[in-house]
Length: 245
Image 1: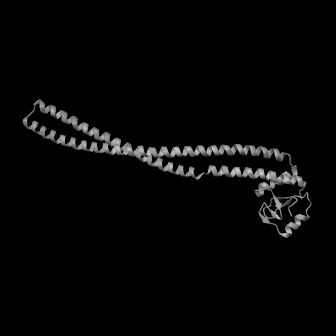
Image 2 (image 1 turned 90 degrees about the vertical axis):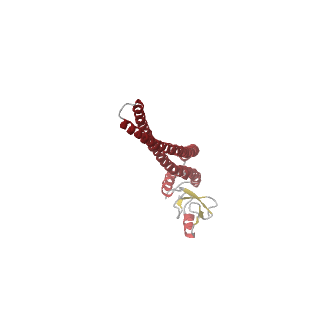
Image 3 (image 1 turned 180 degrees about the vertical axis):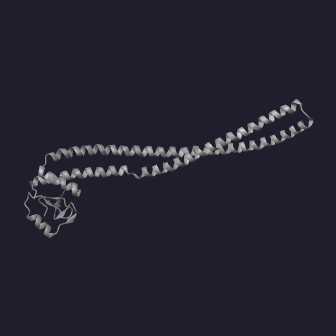
């Protein structure tokens, strides 16, 4: 059975306190790193970016459609200009000039129809651009919220890292002054059980929170003061003091 002086064993409670603090800081770090607000914002940003992409594509398609409509109007207008020039020149057979007049009337009707299409596309494009702008604002707002929360969490993580480094340094310094054999037992127990040592107080193990049975208490009472004893429930080292029984 491993042994250490009672006064030395009492120091394990302080060491356990430092380890408990480090564990608490680690849990806080994990909680911050998995903050649900980040996941929610990432999900919202993914959806918003998808809708923004669709809005941009709709604007692009409408702009292409407008260019085609403008080209169609320009093409018809050019033909009308050429036909009117020929008509105004007065050259050609009478029947050809009459046919040319009819063609100009038809072309003007065609241009009017195309201009209506052009106007409809322009109005639709304006609405699509407004939609794109609104969707871009949504994306910007989400990114802004993300940045604020990320900065907040990064600040908290920095504080935890600073505190953890300080506690870890204190822990190393304190552990260096402990009995080497006892420390080895403690470290092994801590790694295996999650708790290295706890106080035995009025028959209750503070490692498990359970009242020990009369049989377990009798065994501990029979052990030498410098024997290292363990909690039958949690498996951690039980540190006895004057009021343990």
